Image (cartoon, rainbow, N blue to C red; front, side, top):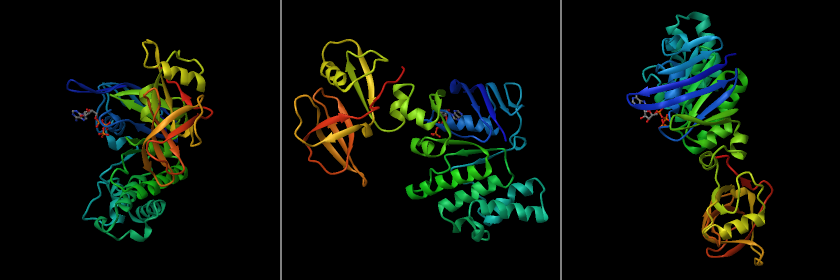
Length: 350
Ligand code: ATP
């Protein structure tokens, strides 16, 4: 079991700082996602863990072993880690079994030990019947499972995954998410998974490191990120919701439905103190009965059918936009009453 300690790591490319002073303690056996928008430095961080990039500053340790610092760089093949790439990176001229066994050949493992480990790795990703096929005869999901088996065959302490599902369609992604979680439960490998897709990170990871512009902005469980985002930016990056700017509010103040209504009514006056709050769509109940004068109301501006529900894009009398869900279709232009449910308000710290 291997824990990873990333201490104040920085990576500079010329005058661009791709990763800035990033610290993370990853527990042995933990499944961690590095999540953030394109260009925020996730892949660079992963490549520094793997040893494909050196660090400009800071240190990376695997248990008590120093892997990287400004003065030291352990080569990738000595790190007991394996990496799965978005592009699969399979050899086209080798069949599935030979692709999976390739890292063993590099380590001069042969004979029955070689056969046993290849068979075991293929079984872990349910690809035994495909052992003799060439990669071109496989679907994208099957190719990605070959890449995963190839990474498992050496029994690495840490598995690094760089957007491994990015090339797959939506259904296949969901089934591969199960495969990764299953694999993690069976092997207890420490896993670091890079993605820009928040739903993918939330579905699989024990903890998520949210990155922005090379910096760590929050490091927490998926539930905490969703319910207690540290900043407005995290709140809008994780899950859906509407940002409302209300007047008369003070940060940390417990908001009520009536305070929200008063605050929104005053939001476009000259009040200087405007407080951002985030309301998730699942915390709003839409009532199509004729609203009374005390109700918070909204006008349906647009309706999007999502299969299991409709998304309503509402406009409040204060001018603010609000996203809500409803189980059946409504008319565009219709006025509805809105009720806020328990736990409706997220107030970011910053
Ligand atoms: P994506 O999701 O698009 O892959 P990312 O979060 O993984 O993005 P990185 O690939 O880590 O981002 O890149 C972070 C920043 O560092 C980007 O601005 C990128 O242009 C820059 N960068 C990455 N590699 C190099 C390099 N070898 N030389 C110069 N700049 C680089």
